[in-house]
Image (cartoon, rainbow, N blue to C red; front, top):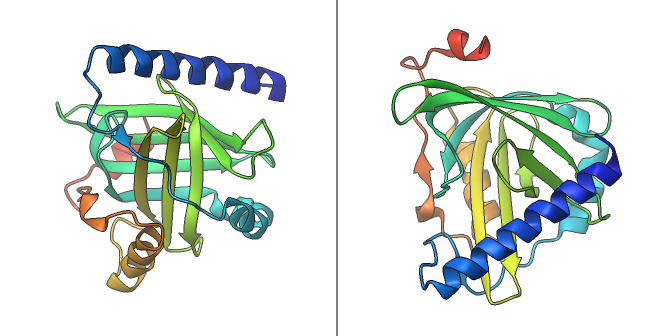
Length: 208
């Protein structure tokens, strides 16, 4: 996909999201993940300068350790994420188990924002493209991911994730993410732990 095609797709999906938001606002049925206020300030430029040269290190397998409320996440447990770096962005594949007990593969892409904003964009099937900001990572153990979208500075929606390189996470590395989110005033009590471990069929998920 070319940058022009990506930009067009992003703009179309953003417009669709805004129109949907207007519709539900008029109907007085704002989803609980859209709240009054604005996205918290994040030093995306500083993070970009630090992380962009190391994007290749971010590739490989991650496991979802915890997540905030996210209606766009079809899998509820055993989430295994594969990122393949192509020198520009990532092909993304998230495999996990749905609430109904089915194994599901969800494909997407992560790429530099086509409008030149110093942040990655994430675009999965059936979802709108949104920011993908890594607040903190050591590339080998943990990653603290934040995505926030403003709606005309009156409302916003945000989603957060904690990823790990193995199905478990040490308290030391968990505290790194807790601090990263607390520093931008994201309440860590919003996180729910994602089931991982011996009950997860990782071999079957890998081969989806």
